[in-house]
Image 1: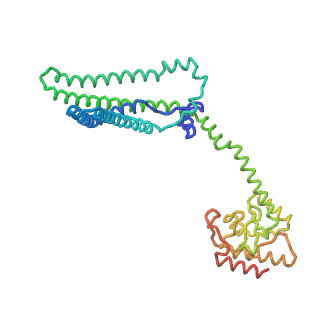
Image 2: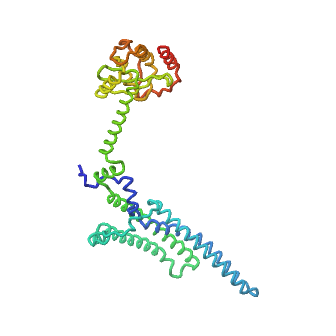
Length: 393
């Protein structure tokens, strides 16, 4: 097991974003250069052939002008030649620019390293400077330069050696020029391919080294989580205060309840019925100490307590505070409310009572998190339930 100070974890998205601002992104400058050389070697014959044809036409026109030669003609030919050269350079430069942009996008896109621009005293540290000069990075750069020179020199030697038999006068000059041109372009393409392969290897090494440098320890990840998401202890305290405030509001609403159904000691559910709002709603519910507090407040506010074990358990399991009771329990709750309302009409309030419906079994009902939200007035049972309670009043 690694300790909390060892950097063994991958960087988080926030740390990667900060690393980009500091310029810590795996990138090799050679990828764009070698790619440009390879593309130029592949497109140069077409571009050169087109420009040689244009130059040949200009030369023929200038040599066959004869008596029609003039300053205007010379100026026109000069402008044509300059346009051809300019367009060729623009086309070649645009291609190289596009290849450089594509290489940068392939290595992480464009970014502005704002933090690396700011001056830091740590950059003047001679010890860190010596590590950069004589460290693993410097050794890799030296080995890369030596390998690159050796491979490019080897490819060039093989290419030049293959052209040596053409020199000596035995081969016609046009044939020599054509063959040397083809072999020279092939030599440049081979050098570009070798350089591109070395650029890929350099990118892989740079990415691996950058991945090690940007790793995080478990303690750093915990600290970052606290900064972004908040301290778990503070969040727990806030959640506790929110629950306490909700509990206080729930206790304050008990005085408006019509009845509190109890278990009799473990569960308590307070119901309020308003004919204008449809089915009865739960204004308070709880188990254990909260149920005891609900019974205490109900006794102080003269809210009747009705002992009905199966109904109290079913309501506690299938409802939440502020939610209407499930339609399956309309009939059982209607009997209890009819009993409570009849006592209220005779001026009797509060007290503990046995359920008027006894211990009759109840239909199965879904838990609170699984049953669908009930909309008042959408079920026939709710209308019958409201009419039944209105008649009891």
